Image 1 (cartoon, rainbow, N blue to C red):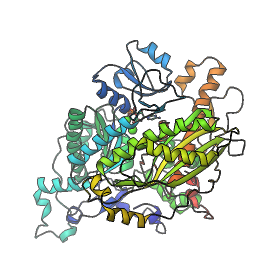
Image 2 (image 1 turned 90 degrees about the vertical axis):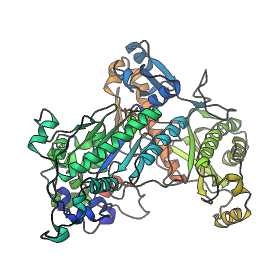
Image 3 (image 1 turned 135 degrees about the vertical axis):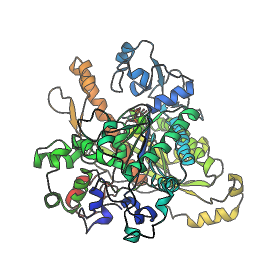
Length: 628
Ligand code: CTP
Ligand code: CA
Ligand code: CA
């Protein structure tokens, strides 16, 4: 249940969820559908270690050499052997090379005009090539499939290119009843029938497979806790999940060559928070009793959705920095100041998160390939080069998806062109769309031909000056026409399938009017030698990392580094706004920027995923989430 749907009775009424050691009754054990209120709920977040670097190591057959992955001049992934030399993502390449002379440096694959597949070419140039993350996406699907195959009954939600949430509650319950069959029968003499508490839990042997987060701040080892705090039934559930998680992680490492790290706890928020406790190749268990000790010293602005405007408002109101600082504030007070749904703040500080783990629908409704152009397109004749490059990416992604679902068909192709402008918002954007032909072979040529037609409509055929800083091509309205079709040939040879799809097709006009200009650009850094900037759109402040700053000696370099940071963030907003225009749930990782906000949701946020309706005034804490 999300808070949004819980509105109206927004109070921390679920005392059992704040209880770290709830009484478990036969009813709890035997009832199947308690959902997020299940006192034996177990969720894990599994994240791949140094993922892009690991993908390159697998591709190149490298095992333990220091290696980094570049995107143009920037380091985007650093493997763990390279981290031992002090290399980080925020360093400049030259600096990284100095740290480790034997460093292997791999540039991500790129699309090149005229090539059907992205590749690792010599002489790549950001002015003509486009970064491809497709290989990493394919490897990510393999890992996800191993979770699905290895964990029957578990709910699995892809959270980002290298992360998944896994809800172990059901398979753990099954294992629990098998291992302790006495739990499946209410004893005839049970005083309260189904509501009788189950017997005391057995002892647990926490093997070396999992790290345990300590319960007491002064515990030397978590094992010491086990003497003072004997296991609860929830610990038994965590332990069973940890065994399952460990087995599948070892399988993934053996079969695919990827090491992963996992956090295992009672909900998504805490699982995500525990996953990076020890890295690489390890897993961490957060017992319920360890939650307070783990959360209290945490800087609350690091909690997802408590950064940004809402976090700043809390700091302003209370002059606080850690979770512990906020705990004395009563629910009533928070609700008085931040509206009814501030119950979400109250609960998250106590480690309560009701977000469900939900498998994403198998078909992405849209696919977008985008390129931020550091050298803008200034002539109409420059467009087709990029359209071919972007068509290459769309063709590959659609055909990859068709391997799983042969009858996938994108109903529309859309082109977007964005220009920096002198408007208050800094960006203007135009788009054109048209129905996409219903054909079997979706090749680069077919997409490029349709794309070029839209390009001419977008910019006209005149010779006047144009300036386009960002270009995107997108398939929208992607649908699987018939899941029962065995092959694409049989589907496209079947006129009834075609007819049905045509009937379902929306009534698209040939093109649509220019999309409205949206607020996009972040303000330039102000003042002498700034080292950070605040984006007026999302109100987040971005600072140059201290390591970068320590390497920069002159003001010009600093300005350049800041400009790069700003552009990167700017592109992120642009890609997001284009994505919203295409389809609200479109993925933006097709954009030629990978340094974007990860798509993983670590917890539910009131109404945040919905765009505010026009004319609807945000209330309470919702106003802190009114954009994005
Ligand atoms: N990534 C990126 N830019 C970012 C964040 C992530 O390009 N700002 C890419 C990285 O290349 C990375 C992948 O997304 O390989 C996953 O990111 P993340 O899990 O944050 O880091 P990892 O490199 O996997 O390292 P870790 O072992 O710490 O998870
Ligand atoms: Ca990772
Ligand atoms: Ca990650």
